[in-house]
Length: 317
Length: 259
Image 1: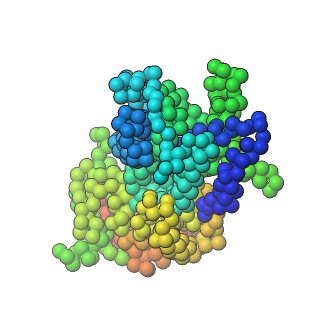
Image 2: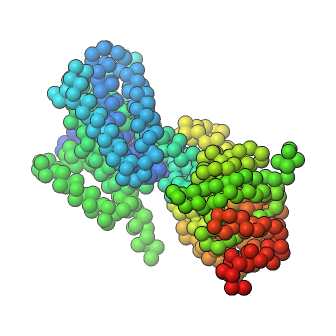
Image 3: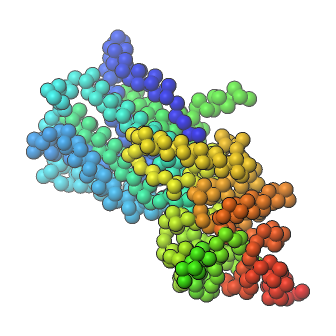
């Protein structure tokens, strides 16, 4: 039976709760909660992507576009029209879902490389729209003046409060996704991954399931985008380019695609690498990512989340 | 007419299947009586697997109709046909190797429960109850096919003989009215073949109609009520085993006219 243990989730949740306090005690990592906000935002995207790629076996190179859709819809509607930020977040998710269903219906019939190409092209188109629709998006210069979030008079204006908000969303998304994986839906997804002919012979509507998961990953991506926009108060198109889509893939490859924990581990590690630990590499950062991807695919096909299994294997011998 | 539907669970009328210019099934007509075991035999390339793919919806036939319980199903997709009550196995084993033995059979129950994405994510009590129910019925099936003690093993780790049995178990899990078995004995040793034959008989005894493609003549002659012989996509003989065995056309097709 595919069972995802509850204890690690509880330990992890506890760690997330006390982490800002720990960081506060150690001056050299005092600013880490700020980085963890971004890590949490990326976790939301990788959780969806992991379900899509690792469990259902579909490759998407266009996730940055959904991240951007959420960010821009929240940004434009709140900054230019003064709409309620939470309502805009929901609108962003609804639009991302509609776009994913529209794009996914024809492209998820494609297989392997072709699906990757279709989502790649989609990502590029959305990126061009962010750049060119200057009247709406501010073009390459980006848009500023996006307000912060508040709820019933409480302002999420400190790093700590935003940290708990983001990680609250991550936890809910994570548990929801774990439940899906352990249910009949997750079983159907893994069946699709293993053999589409057999899955459909057993009554699994293969394209319906693929679209549902693609839509779900898009909704999470859009939510992440809204949270990103309200945290930074500024967005520009370069955040949502093809390289970011690839970086998301590196995150789940490093963490481990076939394990939902991989999404969390990979997103956090890559975020810390790029925000903190790889600063001296400057432009050569990309080479480090390439090296990581190469190392992982050759030596750790199950990513870091697969390491415990490997270690267990040693002891069993 | 309605008596006829009652009698014949499956009926093919004028089924033609062409790939490019190649005619793989040529104006095929036959019926499968409810509650019987019908075998389809024929030399390699006779169109047997294509016929299975047409019946189970992997392909739509170029021409003709496939009636299941009196309703045309030839234009339905494979997953819809599964919901109608037809289940199948594959010539080359198509198990879900990334899952356990039990999960494979549980997936077979897919048509019997509604799976909702939201309900599974929120772990609503109803979806938990459904999981429990199909887990129990999957375990029952594993007991029936004799793999109960291996329920935790990965499907990949089973030897071929047991993989074949598991595929049959998975197909049974949907509680089909018609089960299509594509070479259930291929690659099995004598003991395993014997086991597979008695399992097929047991399935049939429970009231499920069986349609099978098989090369092992001993199996075919032993368990079938009726045999359909295909050659180059055409029916060359049909009838009870003893008739088919002595049919000169069949001997000719198999032995190339030497006999």
